[in-house]
Image (cartoon, rainbow, N blue to C red; front, side, top):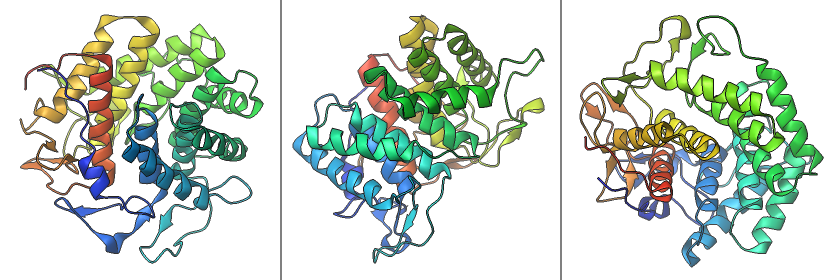
Amino acid sequence: MTALPADFSHLFRMSDDTGLLEHARGAVPRREHGYCLDDVARGLVLLAREGDPTTSQVRLADVYLAFVAHAQDSSGSFRNRLAYDRRWMDLPGTGDWWGRAVWSLGSVATGAGPGWQRAEALDRFSLGCRQRSRWLRSMSYATLGAAQVVTMLPDHEGARRVLVDFVERIGPPTDGVCPWPEDRLSYANARIPDALLAAGAALGDSEVVRHGSHLLDWLVGVQTVDGHLTPVPAGGSPVASVRSGFDQQPIEVAAIADAAARASALSGEVRWRGTLATAAAWFEGANDVGAAMHDPATGGGYDGLTVTGPNANQGAESTIAWLLTSQLASTVGCERPSP
């Protein structure tokens, strides 16, 4: 099956002039849950990857960028949750939302959008990258944005410092049986090797690239059964005895797709294109239940894979996971295996 272009219709349905609503009942947005920076930043990364954005996509990126800017405080930290009545529900911090915001700003600053977006994003990125997070995934997200900035602006000291700090935090490869740098797999696990690949490439460090590739190899291997992806459940799994289960989260599959695409671009190895194709196929039904994980009628992605099939709700996180994977598959031009 040939990859089809990403369908942004549900993303527009979930968006308004403030930002991107977090949850949906089926395909209907749930305003009572409001917005979160996590999802807006994900959406901004998606839009920044459009090589020739439409007028509607540029306008939506304007909305998302304004949301990210509004969430940032003078120290570079970010708030995450905004109620539908536009009241912030939390204080600025450096959880996952900080890392995703920095990633999104680096993506826009180096993307194909208009100059005003790129300039504002770079200013906000430069402020945000002064912070650090104690959370490994948050640092992974920030590293992805920093790597994009360093690739375009090699002398950006703040971005380079993020990369170096992340690589030092991961440390060198281990000699043990399990190479993973944590005791448990949790969510979006492939963002860690993806960030190592990106940092190594941006810094010109082939050892870091090899480390990232090795981690990704291991991660894909323990989450593949009979030729299809079978991700760890939402509750995670100990790395010493990785077990698949339900509920499976689309963000895990999207992270694998991203990392595989980067590994393919850096190494030229055909096997990584196969991994990307397998990730795309998971959304088409090549999974443990044999059910498609997106709704072609709405353009939305389902919120999780349960033992009885998809969770029919089409929230922002899962929709963007599907769109990012579809976008990558179309850009790389890989063939998806039939379900």
